[in-house]
Structures are given as C-alpha cells and as structure tokens.
Amino acid sequence: MAGIYIHIPFCKTKCHYCDFYKSTDFASRPDFLSALKLEIEARKSELNGEIIESIYFGGGTPSVLKAAEINRILEQIFSSYTVSGTAEITMECNPDDLTQDFLIALKSTAVNRLSIGTQSFNNQDLKNMNRRHNGQQAIAAVRLAQETGFSNISIDLIYGLPSQTLDAWHENVQQAIQLGVQHISAYHLTYHEGTVFYDYLKTGKIKELPDELSFDQFKLLKSELEKAGFEHYEISNFSLPGAYSRHNRAYWERKSYLGFGPSAHSFDLKTRRWNVSSLREYLKAFESNSTYWETEILSEQDQYNDYVITSLRTQWGIKDIYLKETFSRKFYTHFQSEIEPFIRSGHVRKENGAFLLNTEGLFISDKIMEQLLYVED
Ligand SMILES: C[S@@+](CC[C@H](N)C(=O)[O-])C[C@H]1O[C@@H](n2cnc3c(N)ncnc32)[C@H](O)[C@@H]1O
Ligand code: SF4
Image 1 (spheres, rainbow, N blue to C red):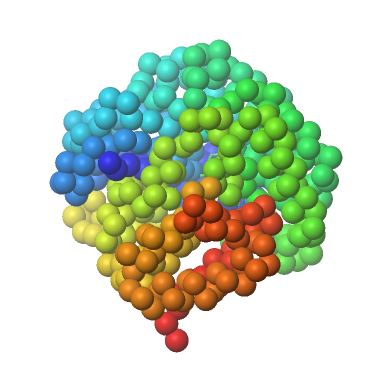
Image 2 (image 1 turned 90 degrees about the vertical axis):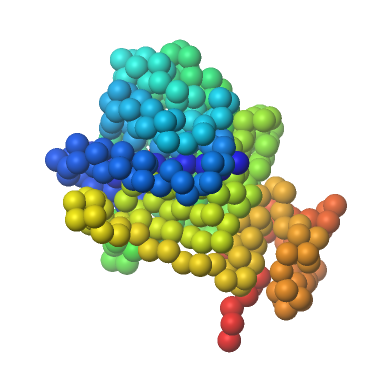
C-alpha cells in the first residue's frame, strides 16, 4: 500500500501566513504539466508495483488547473501505477475557484475527496490573511461542492490568529459544524520566516496570541467538535466516524509515498527524497536531463525520530512493543527515561501498550517531542 502526492506550484496571490512552495507566475504552466508527466512516467518502477491507495493533489493551488488537466494527470498515473479501484483521490481547492462549472467538470474525474481551504468565516480574519474570498464565499463554495455530489469533504481552518477572540473562534467552529462536512483540519497559526505575518511580528505590527488564549481555543475546538460527533484522531485533524484522511494517515503510519512536482517529498521506509523547491530549477533539470532532487538514507536514529514524531501526533500513539522490537536498546532506554516526567505531569498516559497525549499534552506536543527525539552528542 502506498500513496502519491502531486504538488501544483501555482497560486494567484500569496497568503500572509503561508510558506508552502508556490509561484504566482503562470507562464510556465504548460511546461510544468509536461515535466510532471515525464516525472510520473520516469518513476514508475520505484514502488515495485505496490498498490496505490491514495492520491493527493496539494499545493500551491491545484484548483487553478482545469478539470481536464487534473484528469490528464490522473490518466498518466493510472497508466504508470497500479491504483486501487477504491483509492482516495483528494484535491485541495481554494473557495474562490469553486464555480459550478468547475465542480461539475471535476465530479466527472476520479477525484472523490475535496479539501477546501476555508481558513475562517470571519471577513476581518480573511482580509488580514490576504485571502481572495470572504466568509460567505467560503460557505457557498462548500455548499456548492455538496450539491454537486461531493460527499467526502474536508475544510481547513486556522486559529491562534493575531487578535482572534475566543468568541470569534467559537463562531468559526460552529459555522464549520453547520456545514455538515465529513472532516475538519484546524491548524494553529505558525509564523514562518519569509512570510508577511512573520515580518509583521518582528516589526511589532501584530502580536502573537497569548498561550493561554491559544490553549482555550484548542480546548474549545476539541470539545465542540467531539460534541458534534467528530473524532479527534490527530493534533490538527477531526473526522466523522470512518472519514479519516487515508492519505495523511498513511504518512503517520509510515507507508511509502511518491511525491511529484517541485518541493514534493517521497519516502520508501529507508530513504527520503525531496524535489527542488524551485519551478525554474525543476523545469531546467528536465530540459538538460539532470537531477532535480536530493536523497537521504535514513539512519536508525532518523527512523526512531520519525516514528516518534509521526505517532505521537495521533490518537493511536507510540506503541511500546514496536519501539522495543524495532530499535536498538539505546533508543528504547532513551525513550523510557524521557517520557517518564510527562507521565508524572499527566501530559502523557499509557493505555493498552501505547503512549498517548492528553489534551494539554497535544497542545504542547512540540515541546514533548523535542525531549523524546534522540540527538547524538
Ligand atoms: C497547502 S496549504 C493550502 C491549500 C490551498 N491552496 C488553500 O489555500 O486553501 C494547506 C493548508 O495549510 C494550512 N496552513 C498553511 N500555512 C499555515 C500556517 N502558517 N499556519 C497554520 N496553517 C497553515 C492552511 O489551512 C492551508 O489550507
Ligand atoms: S494558503 Fe494556499 S492559496 Fe494561500 S499562498 Fe498558501 S498555497 Fe497559496
């Protein structure tokens, strides 16, 4: 079982918080599509015939492509790889691209799950983030997708925004629930170097939300969504029963995946590969038949660290027996001694042989992971 990720590196405008690789220059779009086709075909032997269970169009903004272009990419994948008949095929969409014509055309492709970047329903938040849609448009886009027949829809929300009150966040969460979607990803705002928000923060134009308020927002999110029947299955992800993102779950369960397009990552249990984060370099490499990626063979230490980072994030946690049987004794001993204080403080509990985070532990998971990682002196 494996997955495929395709990075569509175009955005019409740049949002103030985002550091995903993207370009606003659409002139090279035909060249990109040709190069992508070559990459898809060139790498067909890499998965040794493993069955593809999920395909994910991310970005950037996949919804800037025409449905016919998405279809062509999928046809290329179907002809080069063995894709399961029940594969989850997700496409990230920006609300302002979701017109009726586009959705009808998309419905006739094999895409069967949409991840719509609503971010917030509050117009001031959206303006501050430099989004191209308002709250009403975000709601209308989700409804239109539902009316067109998409029955597996996820929406993205961001909280911890500068000056976002608990009441305003509560309204957002209520609005999200009312939409009747199957899945909600809610991310705490991260300030990435190189983004407008990061510069605003450094120059004092905006202030980080106090930790206490951020934590209140997280608790509210969790309790309201659980009350509405959502399962909190990963730090930032909530699903109705059975509607987990199969693609993301495969990442956390350390299954193999291939990533196509600039900045896309690939993983085959033993090695990690990342394509160059530059559309220009990516295209140039195809012209000159040269390499456009780097690879790294994962050491045992990398594999231990990866396992800890990915598993701790989920409701299935870190399995004691897996740690013990998979890694050398020094990693197991390190883990046992570092996890102990968090069990004592109540941030972590052990249940049916797995280490799991409680609510506060989830909120401070980055700090906990830092302690659990094995770093050679
Ligand atoms: C690849 S991005 C965007 C997908 C799509 N282009 C859109 O804008 O809706 C996927 C999601 O990551 C989240 N995200 C991106 N940057 C973030 C940040 N700095 N902090 C928190 N969430 C972020 C947003 O919710 C976004 O929808
Ligand atoms: S959030 Fe989406 S639309 Fe905005 S810059 Fe990032 S990838 Fe582009």
